[in-house]
Length: 160
Image 1 (cartoon, rainbow, N blue to C red):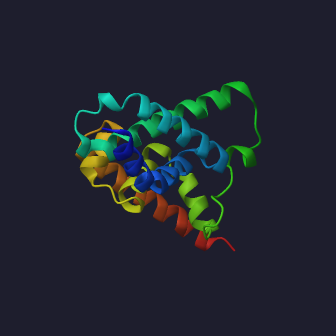
Image 2 (cartoon, helix red, strand yellow):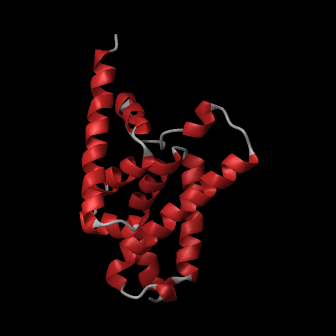
């Protein structure tokens, strides 16, 4: 993949990648850092991409790994308050605080497949490839995440 093709694909995917990073890190600055590192690693390792058709899944997997690495480093090197840990919502986007809080309550291993499939529009096969799980596991996690999200939203509605 040449520089121009890489740049074009990245520009098309950047909003999706950023939202994915925010879904994992819950912090605008950390998501931007993870995305920057992801793009740098992807550029350096672009020759390892066997099929250009798999570019979206390939770069998203790099981003997910980078988010986990960044979160690990942050936890090791400093103690933060809860507000700092959960971070800010990306600027300029309308915020449904109930939905945001309900999503935060869903465990990441369930939340990430849900967001990749429903919010970002990836197929279950693509989600499975990104997360290194079977399609059946991806389908199950999306289902479980919807159930947990529904439970959380029902709880919030019942609170005065």
